[in-house]
Length: 269
Image (cartoon, rainbow, N blue to C red; front, side):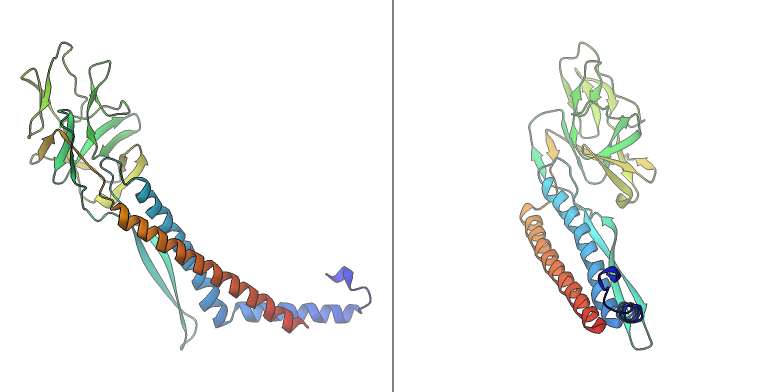
């Protein structure tokens, strides 16, 4: 600090500060700073994003119908000179591999799973939502709803009402819903042209950036639910490796910072 150098002439003080500023500008524009500090920082940010996604996969390993996310990385190459270039990395987004979890038999007639592509549609006040969790319940208004009380949609996008005095409900492979042997509707199964346009919103629901298409050719399996497609062992191993990678990156960042301070201190003397 300048005010602590009372015995040093103002010219010497100013000279020292100019040297420090020049040293910092030179160092920050050097290939070392670009190739080490900024590239390492981009890796650290990308790995933290990946770790958050993997941790979410692990947390939902037992969530019915959950689809694991994978991270999409992208490199950005920048030329520093004709002989030097830097390569940075960032996470462009997440994607699904398209694999579905296995079927878990429940023997409950109102537990449904879709064999093949397609999602069930859930009607909410915010708009249509989609899910692979086909656990059906009947609410106090005799409407087929999910576990949180939101209505399932029929193939024409409407709530499905159950007659008040119904004693038995079953769902056929073609989605037809029978109430005491009478057909009262067809459960809707909808296709999304690009599943990576689905956005997770919690409670096992997706919103979609693209319009859905009602499917005519599908198979409903009654008495089963679609399990999560997360491999617990693989996801836990990946999370441990990411944590180690982040630890090594943090140590590297600290080492570079120490080296920066050392260089500036030596130049300033």
